[in-house]
Length: 59
Image (cartoon, rainbow, N blue to C red; front, side):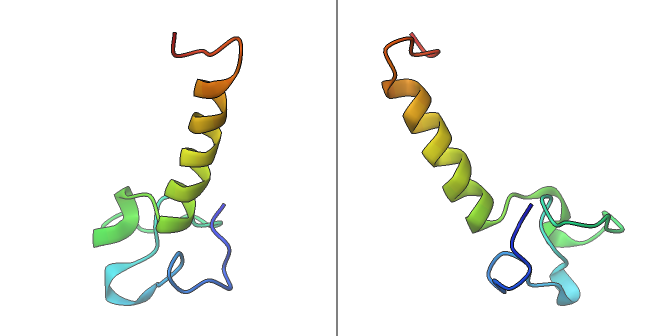
């Protein structure tokens, strides 16, 4: 889940929070179907690690 203390990743307001917000949202706001910068950074790190492993799942 996105860290609630990071307002870049849990902005709330009229655009709403991102898909990995810790609680359910209405789903009708701009950010509700997007990944936050925090989620993208985390996903990127995992995919890079997997891609570079000896058993690389992307080979």
